[in-house]
Image 1: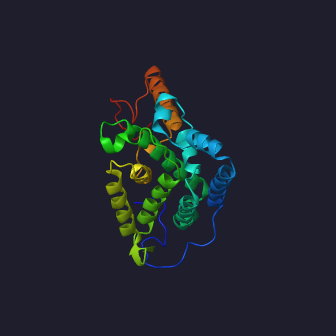
Image 2: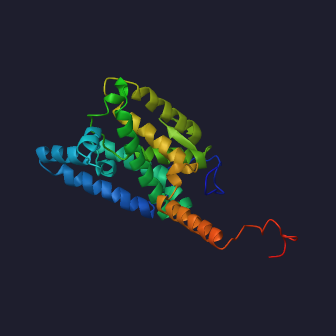
Image 3: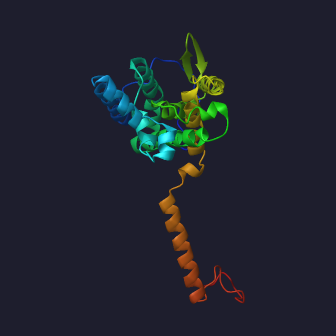
Length: 256
């Protein structure tokens, strides 16, 4: 079940757009547009160099340790239509989720999903399968990994909310299934056309694990502190001969 239930969840309705752009989306969309415009006015050679540096190339992440690419690829786009459709989808699916979650949780979900999709893409690129090996040397750009995570989250929160798919309105849960199936088929291609589709599917998977309380929801530092405190309490109990629930020879365990 979703972590934050909503009184709107599961309702069936249809409207154009979710309303005004929310706080986090203003920052994310603004950053994407700023990077796109900055690279658009650059000389072509410099643009290609920056795209190679900022885009996600698994080869560079593995061999050259360009770890920053796992985050920066989300802000680089391949053209006007690429950024237009990505930002439109971000607005459509992200606005209402931010209202439910709050800005802080939304930003956490967005970046965990986007970066997680990048990490999985790099790992998949090292597997010995032709459709996946083509990922290794390709440059993957765009916010689609995180956006596909938002699509999955939207479908979980509003499964019956109608979404216009080409000319036909379909429930959000069916829309998510269709998008997942299309990307799965595309990702099995060995012609190079399905490179980004693998990252889209990775966004789906990371979002699912995050929302369902998987390992991505854990706070590693909090886990370390918890284990340390538990170990320390255990030592103190042994030192002072303290036992939970009273000693074994107590005649009345309710008295302490």
